[in-house]
Image (cartoon, rainbow, N blue to C red; front, side, top):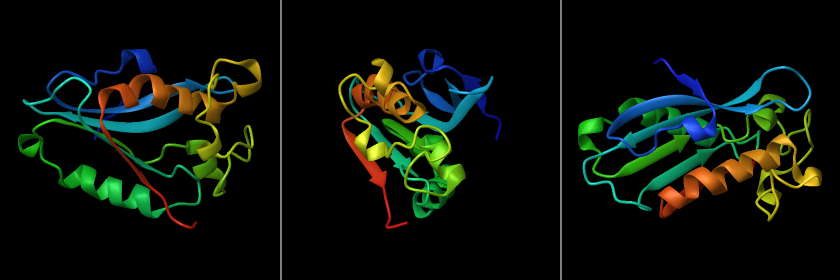
Length: 154
């Protein structure tokens, strides 16, 4: 599968079909980006504000979600999809790489504590974890009515 690298405002989450992306969010300390895998299926009956988004690896040491979503990504056939499905098998790549609950090597934030007002905008809430939360709140939640966060005890 070939993934398209793009910024959040370049994602097509509405046109019919399947697309596989790397969502690029600027890295805090080096030249480059954090890349978040995202797959979207849009079926013929998609409605505004309706759909499902599923997240894996909210925490970096949760491996069951990424495994399940990766398997489902291979099994879901576009012709079977009626509405909108969005998968992010690794929501928090910084924590996933570190294998910890927080984004240890970056901003030391627990993703579950990052969904707050000002996330990704306020300087004190500008690290990668808060920017991921801001991306989810701005671009994903408005398009769906069901959110699955596949968590585990790590």
